[in-house]
Length: 287
Image (cartoon, rainbow, N blue to C red; front, side, top):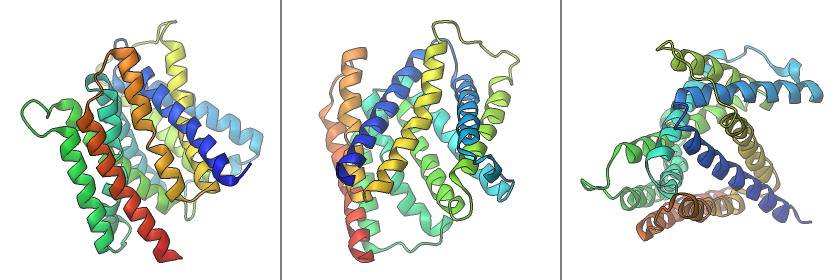
């Protein structure tokens, strides 16, 4: 089996994980708020990280080095994930995923400030194309703009910050260390955010499998994508990842009778074209 085919199979796992997490998050919204979902997800994720690190013998890699950077990174991810979980409960799933795809474009815009990278003409063109796609997806009129659209678009910004800060951490920190502080810190954030009103809901017997699914799917999605990127270039992985949009659109139609809106696909294609154009340009420049 070729590395490219292996990468595509890993991406199928990533698409399935992201899609199942979105459906589980929507189903849980009737019994748990987003802070409680994040708290239980992080609790389950921390157990998985510690068990896997214990078996792999990488527990010693966990350290307090760059603790402040871990803190800022995980605050950004916690905020973005909460916004994302809220968005999947109030707007069509395809619209959420289309707006989430703008994260790489926000990386282009913000990387000169966070990473000190240069904003080239090609990167600027990609960003303009992406934000044109956002306008088409969001339908900027009185009927189109709502809390769900705003939170979904905002989550993409926080995910972009997470991507950039993760890039900085990977220069000196191991994957085990990064995942440990991700789950541990977000568990603490979740406990405080969920318990601020003194009322933390306990998952029912029916909700518990969905909580476990979210915890496992969240880690599995990133694990699959990381493996895919290790086997094939981003110019191969990103187009496959784009199939998340039609996949979740069909899921939303079958499970929730959400309409297949053509403007969401048109806007998403423009967003994808901007991302792919930038990846293609960067690949050519490095070669």
